[in-house]
Image 1 (cartoon, rainbow, N blue to C red):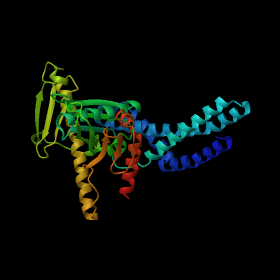
Image 2 (cartoon, rainbow, N blue to C red):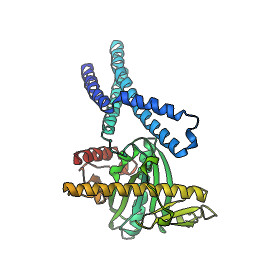
Image 3 (tube, rainbow, N blue to C red):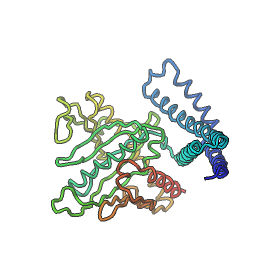
Image 4 (cartoon, one colour):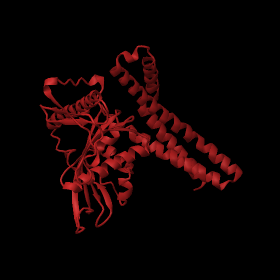
Amino acid sequence: MAAREYLEEVSALRVTLSAIEAVLNLPKLRADSEALEIEASAPNLWDDPEKAQVVTSKLSRVQATLNKATTIRRHLEEVPLLLELAQEEKDASALEDAGKELDDVTKAIKDLEVQTLLNGEYDDRDCLITIRSEAGGVEAADWAQMLMRMYLRYCERHNLKVDVLETSYAEEAGIKSTTFRVSAPYAYGTLSVEQGTHRLVRISPFDSQSRRHTSFAGVEVVPVVEQSDHIEIDEKEIRVDVYRSSGPGGQGVNTTDSAVRITHLATGIVVSCQNERSQIQNRATAMAVLQSKLLERRRQEERARLDALKGDNSGSWGNQMRSYVLAPYQMVKDLRTDFEVGNPAAVLDGDIDGFLEAGIKWRKSSNQ
């Protein structure tokens, strides 16, 4: 690529980045950051741990967005200098390095542009992901575990903090269900487009006749509740069971009944937590998960009422949304966006960025 084309690319990116900065409203973000820093530095902040958590989480999200935008701007403005030095020294490798830097900046701007679409009420929050095996027996349990690994690998690739709260292992292979928390700015907005039924077609490793099987797993994504959400749960509305934590194959993890299962009697929602050693800690975490699920249920009910008033006949999030085909051909296709790739192995290793971007854009267009 000629130097002139590089510079034209930089010019186009400057226009795009300026538009993104306007949407993000950087002056307001800086003002919010300063106000939250003052709150976070208050000596009595942690007298109210829940409020402190809200303040520090908001500060982290605002600062992360500011840092991302300013870093991208700085790198973009460095590219012309790198190009100029490479031309003056007639250094082909330096020119190649400048091109790579420009590619990195282009991708970062694209990612930031997608983030500007995440302006829903809860989009900037952490999220809870629950995966359940559905139709397909041992195949489905194995498939649920494959999906769990896919999301954990995605989080690992992007340096996102993950806490696995509970995993229920199937007897032969795989898992019945799992719930884990992803802590990062815009985790819910980004990963909420993964909600729905995921379908796998492959030659079964559990079938002695090597026949092709279809199995299903459900993915649920909910935002983490904050103090301002006002989700109150009466003790009379729940049943609490304690049990001994276990790992794959029934291997004991704890020697005490520290794991906690809470059933919300009115809705039938069941949540569990077994990752802490203390029953008290597990109960507190399970209650937080239950609050998040009740918040999401309330949000969906409100949306359903609005959709009924608007006459909205769009498809349900709970319907089948993506197919992963490993045999007789190789393909992963999103049934809502039509985005597809021919490398299932990469997708199952956490390379789902293309699906997330397409899903976010699809959701934005369908809500307009």
